[in-house]
Length: 206
Image (tube, rainbow, N blue to C red; front, side, top):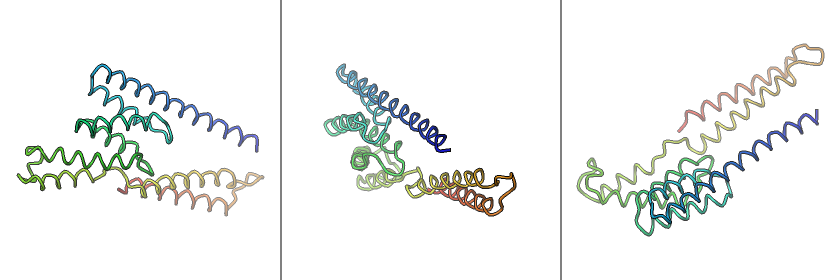
């Protein structure tokens, strides 16, 4: 039994390792593609490639920080709306239980609102006043259609409970003689149902 568990753990770790390697390779490739585009003065292509690099997110991966650094430098120097939007997009898309580069996301939201507020035709519903347009854009940028952190945590814990309950049913629901064990079966069912309920609540909470 112990050897089987170790084999399963080794397979899982190998799979995670392979996935991490691919994320790093793809991220470094996108970063290099953006650098090449920048040397050729293809700014929009560079921004798009750096955004892809930032989206290949892995905690602690150097290419992610480097991609954000390049995007922030372009955005700040040129007041480039496309670069600010790329920063916002990368941070929002890779958000899970935490928000990667949260400070850069906040700066991007503020800069995007300022730049869009300068365009009178950009927020007709807010009227002709720039302050009103700025508030209108800030309000919409602050909204996040993705699930909240607590909802995501609840959904993940629900999946874990679901799998744990199934494990109890499989391992303890039947005794050595092949007969149904009532108490472990009821326990497994309760854990499974609670996990499913938590998953559903977390999935549909925003």
